[in-house]
Length: 96
Length: 171
Image 1 (tube, each protein chain N blue to C red):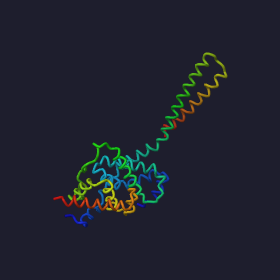
Image 2: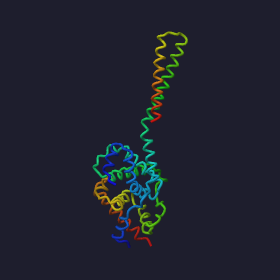
Image 3: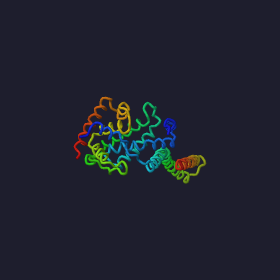
Image 4: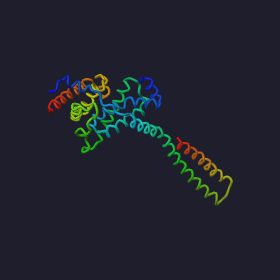
């Protein structure tokens, strides 16, 4: 028959010590991955916008090819500039 | 190691400080979860990882109303309950699945105790582990488990009676 004192002694024994090594390494990797999440989301959003800009540039480019006009060329020029800016943003997000 | 400066730095999103806190508390959190998962090391460690990750995400909200350890145990217990609710009936944890402790701690009494713990309900097992093995006061344990103090005391009493009956029946 187990007494209250015996049970108290058993229950009060500390839990076995667990090694922190691999657990901590994995945790820090997961934290780093978690921290990079906003940058990853931003880069995907930027890639989406980039695809739309490139498609629009292609449409305007095709229009300008059939009827060249300096005024018409302004829009593709702005789109090309936007493409470059967004490419730079994607490259920066990827580095982060 | 002094904990408060580390907590302050971790609240300011210092990864190194949080890593040091995790190393300080990982053993107890994993031990608590190991009991709750009835000796399933893989499940316990997965839940412990999720606990610390959630703690990291929410560390900005830690106001120091309770001890850092108590706050971690609260996250760990709620993570365990969420995982238990998601588990399908055929995946429920039944008997003790762990291996026998080795080395100096490998006493028959200890092994029997872990097997007996596997027969307790999660609140009973958590309440007894927090109050006895991890040294929390009843108030701190009630806070960690999100239970009224009276309910916690009932779980402790019922758990103790069950353990005495189970361990008393052993040859």
